Image 1 (cartoon, protein in one colour):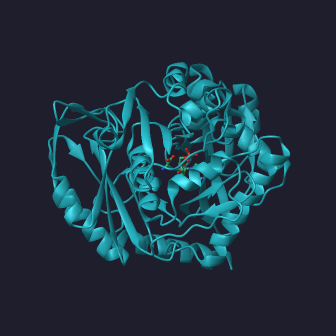
Image 2 (image 1 turned 90 degrees about the vertical axis):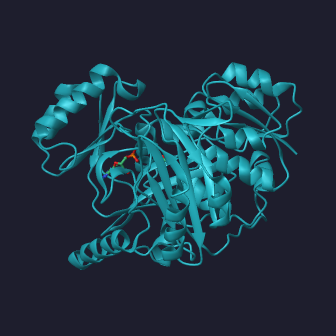
Image 3 (image 1 turned 90 degrees about the horizontal axis):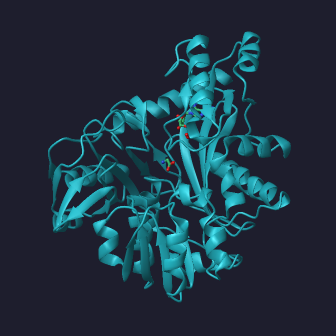
Length: 444
Ligand code: AMP
Ligand code: GLY
């Protein structure tokens, strides 16, 4: 089975590993020379993920069965539409379906129009005076989001990144004037209070096969402090739930995803691929923070290594738009993923550090290693300005998985690197459980 993959991060390394495990022959296009992907691929193309024409031209003469796209940027630019025009089916959404991530306005409008569960209150503005008028009559806490893509770094939360209404207006003005996210429009939405979790699911547009839940940690520093990043690490539990999410909430969240996919179908935007729901569990149940049109990074690294079902076969069925009759299963294990990033990441990264990685020892400990934005030169590995690599510990319980991930981290050496050691540790998890209990207690 010949497959094209697009993307050169740790998420794509996890996708390529899972495809290779099931015997697929991989042709990988990537923007940086990811040594993990390079090793597994039959052939690679070094090309920016958004250079669609070059990637499609490279793909056409390879007799490819299907393509899987990792990152949101090429999906937002319509890479699937272009590949499919050339007869290469894709296990990822077309441009109009990817808008569920690439336009926060489209996503909120869709949920409101179809009265979907998990919706939140919101308003969209392209004019700063109208926004100021609205604020004059609004008293609750709000969140400001550019409508377009910002790599998870454009969202500002009142009481957190924004102190006052004036800060909120100043930031909104900046988004409008500087076209942050590529569209001079801004969404204001109600600030949700609770705990976040991720639910990812495979879909052909109609049938939904959900994965275990994951909790990502977006903040740069330990104790969930500092700026939002692409994600510093994540964990999952053997039963597929989280310590603060029960089965009923899980099922309710799957229903939100199912209803959203049905609404997309009704709008003539059949969504196929992996859909990613970022949820906030609030006192009023799970609410949608955002949808992503792809695997999460780091969440893919928690889930894909545990997938027992043939991933290549699943992708082929998604590309053929029919997963009815398919079932999926996962190893009932806990996972703890921790990212190593360059010092200064989130502010001004210090790139170019040499990393010494003892892959054999990492494997021996029961962990997996996923390369992200590193440069491989002459057999050596150097950091860039983005996240460098992730290790994931697996075990029968979360405590052991965390210890395995820490042991694995000790086999990576380098100067000017940063990581969070607290992810997956009992203290951090207990804090979250207690906060959730207090919130639910307050609501009774
Ligand atoms: P996003 O890029 O939409 O995932 O937002 C980044 C982060 O901002 C989320 O992971 C949340 O921590 C926070 N956030 C986004 N929307 C809201 C909201 N409506 N209420 C509270 N926090 C939010
Ligand atoms: N982990 C968040 C994301 O992939 O967008």
